Image (cartoon, rainbow, N blue to C red):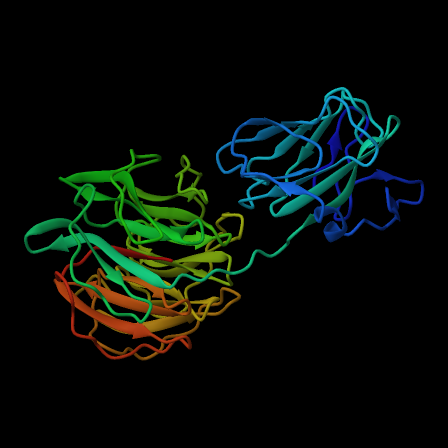
Length: 438
């Protein structure tokens, strides 16, 4: 939680913002260790439209949802104020930790300090109420509370997209209903390619990215709306490569990682909750390709398996801040060209794949809500590789398609149990990707 930052004062803490007394207490306008309840203030507030700009001027008595998805926002307070004037600011998109708000007190004091000090707030999910007290203290934060845990929003539908068939690379997609039913082909949008990856972002949307197109590695991305509509190409950001993996982290963001870029890579690219792909982050863990990734624990991710100079089984956890951890020793059968998805709301599953010597598997490995990979579960359904998987129905998953040019699917229950083959719908293909949306 951020407070006033200046040459003398830098207040950060877990409670209401204030100066530290000699005994270390946080002193607020409501007394030591207390704050005025948010609902006592917000009742008389007139809420305004969502603010998305880099600057705005506040008017007393108003509440402002501030969306900083694209930029920092500097808020100029009124040049004059009366005792009791109140303003409320709320983190509309839970993104203030990425792009903060800055408050310009416009000549008046703020928490007893003059306008030469900088006031910044940079905590996701924060709601801030300030009230003008007098000329000495000026504006005082009367409520400074953040919602630690965003409500979990689980995606209900899925989409398979891109890949390779006997006739060449494809860009077509197939939607998955909230009952796990795969729809017929939807005409492709964007560059036809194979070997991409896909994940969710923004709580309810998806993104396909990277791959192999026209004989070379690709880096473009294609956003998926919350209605499952695929958008045209977005120019490449980061190192172009094929056979990476991708998963969601932080509840509403995504990460592409690893792949083959002329040589094996372990670098990653974060995806914001607005679907913007960031530049390369230095790789962590063993560089490899043809791996899989999924979410676990509600807000974290895991990359697993793949190929470097041999078949691998190690995994790398992804924190809820998008930080990739070092290698975790292999559990289960090492393999490549497998798939993974989440299930049960907070767990994951790796499944299928091959050993690069002609043996294709249908076995699976469950991932606990703490990111612990379990030993092999006997395979169900047709063993295959080069397939994809995604979540559907909020708590279930689906594996689909695969080598050679298959279109069959296998549903995953909310307990992680894989069902027998479902007759394929749509064009059979391999080397595709899948993600969920809502």
